[in-house]
Length: 219
Length: 219
DNA sequence: GTCTATAGATTGATAGAC
DNA sequence: GTCTATCAATCTATAGAC
Image (cartoon, rainbow over all chains, first blue to last red; front, top):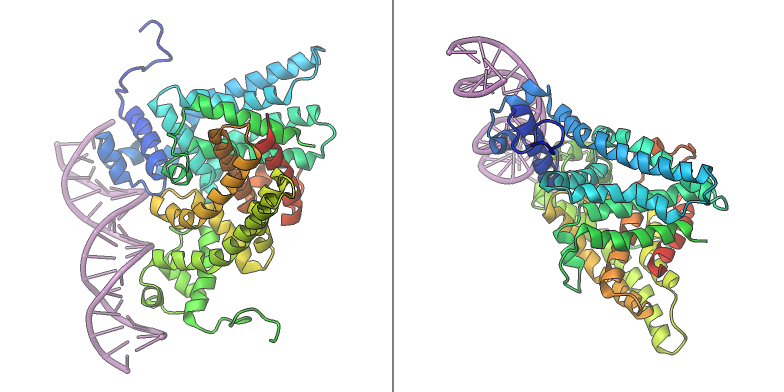
């Protein structure tokens, strides 16, 4: 109890928290649109009307799911990138592309390993990023934008020989690669001739970081 | 008329063709699940019952949309990769990673520039690849698998110092980057601080190919 | 082959008793 | 805050006249 985080730790006691936890899992497993409020409230063991009572609408529930995790995650990423920025300004040499990319990408994978709920959440991010509905995508992009731009700014600083457009697109490619592994699923296995099981986040990260670093540094 | 391709060129005269063309555009613009048969048949100017009469179901229509384009596209990609393979076996040196990646990725971008319909189609691929419903994804992956595996095989040949798992995952990252630009949209503009307009496929390709090549070749 | 009409099911949201 | 009951809208798919 004494070392636990914020307030409610083990079992969520309030309907609101139960709904957030359940929505995180079901939205990531089946998709936001494909998850009906009936399936959600049944799984959560609460009444059908609870979502609209506590959050106002289904979409407001989705936004609440994002806010709960991203506020914390993005604070970590921004802090890491600011540390890199400060070190550079203090004359401790030019930061490496790899350090910047790791600050941008790694915290999401660490979150992924933090528990079943947050694991679902990172999958949800990857799914929402590719949603057809702009308003659904924009809920996430609103949180993404400041972190993306800070990373972009740092990269422009250490890759002055590249056009800004090149840096921008390469960073887009990198986020695409990262998000693809975030929601890795059976379709991966279908392509995987080697038949090897899906590796854990640490293993994927050790392939992903060199990949995006080399891509960013390409001539 | 004499230089036009296959059979029906300018205006599709049959209901079936009109439905394929309209489905391609609406499925890519709004998503497969989000496009109702009502919206589809209204836009196509045909009767609501036409889809089920001609194709049997909505999902069979999606599959027909894929078959019409992918049979041709994948034949081109396989041919290019086989040419690379033959050259290597004839002792004309080891093929470059860049050649292999270009054979795998470029034809899709060429198709994208071939017209409004095929442009929509490449967007549709990228959207379906990230669909929540496995059966929807699998329709595309069934066509993707042989081409992906051939590319994977070639890459293993020229990157013998890498583990097969590394090659596999790097190729997955590359396809993710390619598919991300395929459905580039307003959400890109939202992130793009430089505010530059979305470049054409040739320009994106000239950034994408060096990126994935460097990523594949990373130590 | 094309049309109208509708069956049959599911959805998000709400009103009102408790 | 939680419940039941229900509304109004949507959907895919089909039956049957023309």
